[in-house]
Length: 162
Ligand code: FES
Image 1 (spheres, protein in one colour):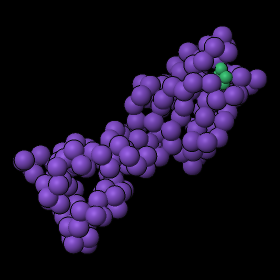
Image 2 (image 1 turned 90 degrees about the vertical axis):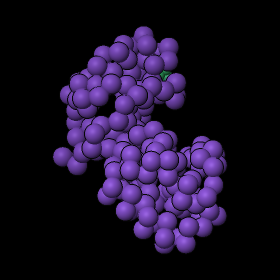
Image 3 (image 1 turned 120 degrees about the vertical axis):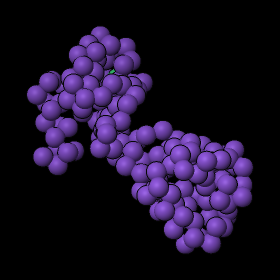
């Protein structure tokens, strides 16, 4: 494995984290969580998973078992806030596509992607019971409905701290 495929600065951080846990493979969950906190996109890239496996002397598949099992550890970029847009029947009738277009334009990403600053991930969702205020989305656990373009910008800006 070519350890230098991973950014040198990140390698140094990972090495420090591994050292602080005495390269103990029983601590792999905490090690991965700590490494993830140093990656702006909030996930464990494949090369990092491989590197951690090598350094801990465990197969990459075991590292992935942990990543898959613990929902707090991600194998794909995930923003600090996950925007989940409902596209079930009522929201479909109420043109969720318009909301999707506004979200994509506002965040400058497509559905399924994460913003470069690691703040937002855009995803589709099945109905989460907010049909009476459809079209609707959730940001983390908070539901927003009766959405308009202006309202969406306002909501997103509150999460940006504006
Ligand atoms: S169909 Fe969208 S919230 Fe129920």
